[in-house]
Each structure stands twice: as C-alpha cells, then as structure tokens.
Amino acid sequence: MDPNLLKRIITAVFGIACILALIIFGKTWGVTFLALVGACGALFEYFVMLFPKEEQGIQRVVGGVLGFILSAFIIFRAGILYESVSIFFIVIFLFYVYLIHTSQDEIQKLVGELAYSLMGVFYVSFLFSFWPKVRELEAGVYWIFLVFLIPWVSDTAAYFVGRKWGQRKLSPVISPHKTIEGAVGGILAAVIGVFLYRIFVFHELTWMSCVILGVGGAVLSQVGDLFESLLKRALAVKDSGVVIPGHGGILDRFDSVLFCAPFIYFYARLI
Image 1 (cartoon, one colour):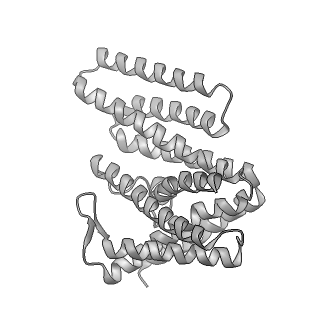
Image 2 (tube, rainbow, N blue to C red):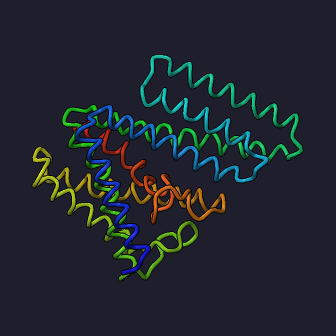
Image 3 (cartoon, rainbow, N blue to C red):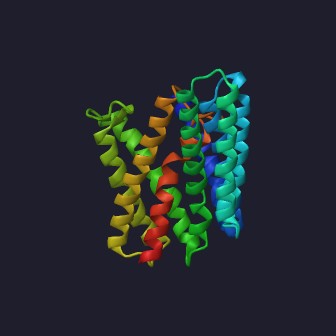
C-alpha cells in the first residue's frame, strides 16, 4: 500500500474517533469546542497563506486575532454580536488605513490584502459557527453526523473513483486532478451513505430526504473543496497547512464540511 495513503487512513480513523467522541459525549459543548478549535486553526492557516513573508507578521497577527475573537462571538451567538462585527470592521479598516499611510507597498496591493482578510475571516467564522447550531437542533445529534458523513463519504469515493476511472477534468483551471467521474461517484456514494445512515441510525429520515441530502450535500461539499482549491491557487500554495498528517491542514480537511453544514442546518429547520 502507498505509504501516504496508509498515513491518510490512520489519521482519518483517529480523527473520526475523536470527533465522534466529542459529538456523542460532549454534546453541544463538545461540538462548540470543536468549532472553536477548528476556526482558530483555520484562521491561522489562512493568514499564514495570505501573509507568508516574515515582514508581514503584523498583518497575520491582526487578522488572526481579530478573526478568532469574531469567530467566538459568532459561534456563541453573543448578545453583542452586532456591536462586535461593527468593531471588527472599524478596527481592521483603521489598521489598513495606517498601513497605507506608512507602508511602501502599493495601495492596490494593500486593498487587495484587506479584501482577502475580510473574506477569510467571514468564510471561516460564519461557516464553522453552523456546527453547534446543527447540534442544538431537535435530534441534533443525528443531524450533526450528516454534516461530517456526507462530505467525507463523498470526498473518499470521489478520490478512489477518480483515480480508477477518471478521464474528464471537472475544473482544470482550479483543480486539475478532480474529474467528472470522481464527482459523480462521490454524489452516488453520498446518497448510498445517507440511505444506510437512515436504515441503521436515523430512522426518521424519509427516503426522499436521503436523496436530497445526499445529492445536495455532496454537490456543496465538492463546491467547498473547489473553493478552497481556488484560494490555494490564488495564493500559490499547495496545502493550507501540515497539522493533519497525510491530509494537509485544517482547511484542507474541513473545506467540504464547511459548505455542507449550512445546507444540513437549513434543511433540518425547514422539513
């Protein structure tokens, strides 16, 4: 077996066991802790990708610290959330006005960095905040499993189907290794996975819900994967980090989960 593939499998098994333990035994607080840790790590990775040079350390710190504070307010849905978002905007705008006045960099470059910083903070903060929101739903312990089950089943199936039968590129500009055959395989596997989940665990799901959740969740998961690939390509990096052996960084592992979580939340609220 490929040593890198073996490392990926071992890490995945250990990681899934830890996540399952937090979801089941930690209840809402366990998922909230998981979301906070994930947001913190993902923000750190994002700003290291955005500001890789040593002299850009101040931008990295300001973006990461402000982003994590805002993440905590969003995840806990604090009563002063409106005020905290307003303060975040004011502080980061003032910081970049200061940089524009004191830095030798071009204004266009700094404004681009400001736009990337704002996008990264809200991309990470808001999407991670859906994890505890899903866990707090009625039957949330069952719904939260789908947040992770659908993307990971879809990703795994797409990877192996793509390696075996992939011929046509899904998005050669963004991610040249992903194929249409792999994407279709990932969607079918997700539907089958949700069917099995319904049969053995979550009996309240209808068969139509299994199809909608499997297809919709898998498609959004793949969109999330492509979006992170787009970010990495724009910032000229291969992986978002190295914290997860065989998988890269936190964003590399949870990019698809982040896009799937809001879909699961709103679907569960509407049915």
